[in-house]
Image 1 (cartoon, each protein chain N blue to C red):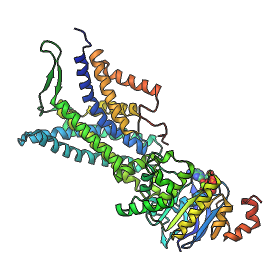
Image 2: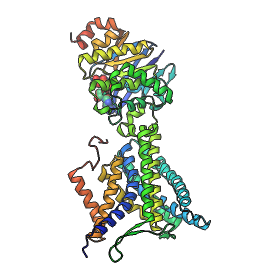
Image 3: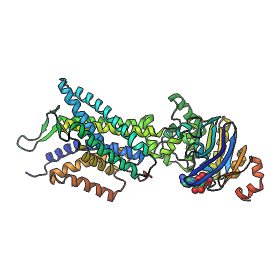
Image 4: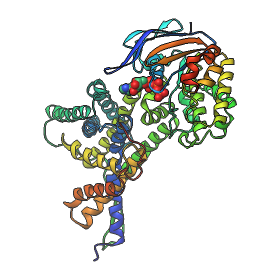
Length: 234
Length: 309
Ligand SMILES: Nc1ncnc2c1ncn2[C@@H]1O[C@H](COP(=O)(O)OP(=O)(O)OP(=O)(O)O)[C@@H](O)[C@H]1O
Ligand SMILES: [Mg+2]
């Protein structure tokens, strides 16, 4: 098992944002999590990263219990996050942003991985010496994904990578996610763009109000009446 | 004689740059710590004071051993003062600030004031609440100008201060711009939580920031003790306040800003004491601060986006 959540509860002070979530992700899969605004999708991803920590339940990554580990330790275990809102470092250049993603790699590996990311995103190569903050939204999203890949993760967590982007850019990004999976990276994708996410994913979960209410294959969820009404606009 | 001759003007520039170098070195510590944790480290002036004490004590000890070579004195003194002062910087962060991470901003600020008072009294207990002085190790200089009029005086010590300051600032700038840890420092000051999500132990980066700030404060301390040959436990207070002013003037959070702010402040004070009265020097420093903040609240080189929560 790549990732396993068992009855995870997460609180922000008094607010219980996750109310007993269980799910699993197998190696090589693309699994998506869909849900409305405020359902707790970002909280779920952040809980996997230990920021905040789950107050009850367990998070297992490749069989290892990471529930109580500090964030920086978890993030060195072989998973990477492409966070909501991209959060690239605006004052650092494109290349420096990528180097931050590969912080623990030696020089040789860093160079190899930079080239690998540039091959995936040629636009980033053209702009490698430009400050991150000067990129367009789509380019920033590519940079955030590239930065995530720089640590050679086994599992890539993505939080709404399509948010605020033009349809043509979204199509590109989803195409790249496919390519990344073909390179052997397992993907856990949070999306509001349910249609595309479910088309891409092997399996999906639906989160409502801090609870998983549906779990099925991507195709079945696409065909599901409840899902169509709530997330696919009828 | 006119009070505004060119030579006198040049003299004030020399004096101002000397003073400004010291302010700038100290200011960098304020600005870097603020940049990364959004806190004013009010104990930083005392860290500088410790650097000056260690400098004076080491130079005196070297004198007792008969070491007279100025470069040997400078290197050994800088090395020891940086080591000792850096350890103080690291310890202060570890004991007084790190346990308070995540608490409301006022809490570490109060802790900082506590540390500042503690260090002042701690040095008073160890060294006495009086001036400690030594023989100057580097005397002499150059004079320029007419034999019968105003002569510009540039002391060797002033040149030494400029050279050492430029060397350390260049070193720091290169470290921040080029090295892996320097990059991590910049990333952390832009988005610390995100750096943490990339696997970086941000506590270690913060500790490094304190040590770097203390290192430059130690350099300033050594230079000041060599320049004036005099220290006491209270020199950290006013120097800290001035350096903090310089950091805000330049744009707090910005390293080039701290450098520029220090130099501007040094020049302003030097001209104020020459053309107004010596007593006006502090007034001018703070008047300048208020003026800049009114016209440009982010400071001379500050970025408006460095808004800390
Ligand atoms: N830092 C926080 N402090 C307090 N409450 C929070 C915090 N972050 C999120 N919440 C609350 O937790 C709940 C889940 O938020 P979360 O951001 O996980 O939702 P989401 O599904 O990612 O929403 P969106 O689609 O808008 O990104 C919301 O009710 C939100 O208000
Ligand atoms: Mg979200």
